[in-house]
Image 1 (cartoon, rainbow, N blue to C red):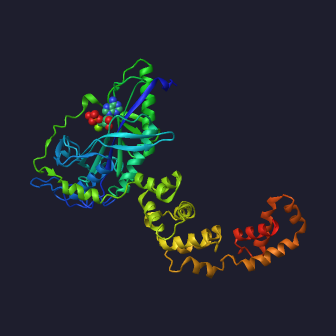
Image 2: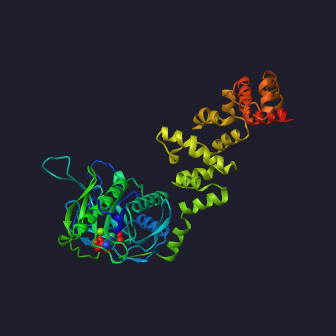
Image 3: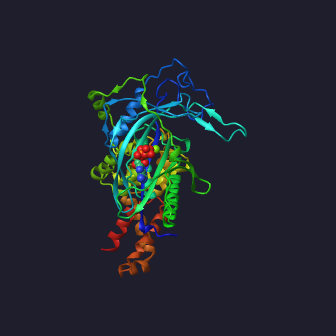
Length: 481
Ligand code: ADP
Ligand code: MG
């Protein structure tokens, strides 16, 4: 294979995110993935003559939220435009989009790579409607059309040609998915098509500043496929150039069965979209007051919470990153800190035993039936030495879901409260020391590792209920005299 050290890849991504509004962008039809085909198709969706579109305010709000989160300039006077082309799943014969006035301009998205962080520059975020779906694989003879999706609001998030590897693209799309979920404006489910990506790829010699001819790989529907498609394209292009060929500007498609791409059409055949402002839709103007209102109601963003968790709660990078991976997790953490100040322990419990139970039950923090107060009490119970950590995790935590009983009550019921009464423990400690004079002598000569043996013996005598921390202290106090 040719050395890729000679070349640099340049990538620009166009991500389409379906907005999680109840109804469509220009009419009241419901949006429902997986609904019976062609059941949410009013005359407006069907583009019957005489119907008029009306803009869904929620969709505008969601687009603005994404723009604010990405540090974009929000454009205050906006127009919708008609992008004319014929396709069977496009009932009007044009798509309503934004042409010269994207609702958000510029902005950036921070990505974290193994060795560095980068800000990926955005070109724009604009609003548009989705088309219907052509289904080619349920009938031998015909293509079937489901128009339920037609008119679903999308935002298209377009980067500058500012990504330089498949890994960067992977991280970027992960960040976009995290952000739209965090803002609750899109469910981010790529397998359902809620988030789709077109990847524009070119190569150039290292050091060259002019962009090379690009190829656009359409409709990538998983982060893995985005990465694989880009990797394949980079290799393919380098191969062409190394063999003295020139790269054709093309639209290509990805074949997930063998991780390759194939040509769909050359640029020569590209559509002339004959854009013009949609005469049925008045300009929409976003007042300062409206924008301030949205700004005021923005949640803290993952990056802000990531920093706050480190500064305010002393968490390390890893814990802070894990706890801000999604909003429900971060929210739960913030509910628990109200009840206990053992911040590090909250992180350990959430990312350890609690996450394990959630994984086993295919649940997550957003549908967690666990009272933060009871969870905090459990953590405190262990911190106070009343119950041993592994027993608490294995026996009490699973019973705490939807529980009315407190962790202490459960522990009492299960008879797993640790004995931390010094007098009671001292009796066992004395018995163990008296029974093992040889070991005691060895210990006192310097074989300090024997402490584990003594503690183990005391635990046995207590049937596992002795608080090991206290037992250790007691034994050390006795033997180190
Ligand atoms: P088009 O008009 O073909 O849709 P645009 O200029 O609108 O192209 O860009 C679409 C996307 O392609 C953007 O994300 C942009 O950053 C990216 N892009 C443009 N030129 C290149 C290039 N030469 N190499 C890689 N990406 C590019
Ligand atoms: Mg494009």
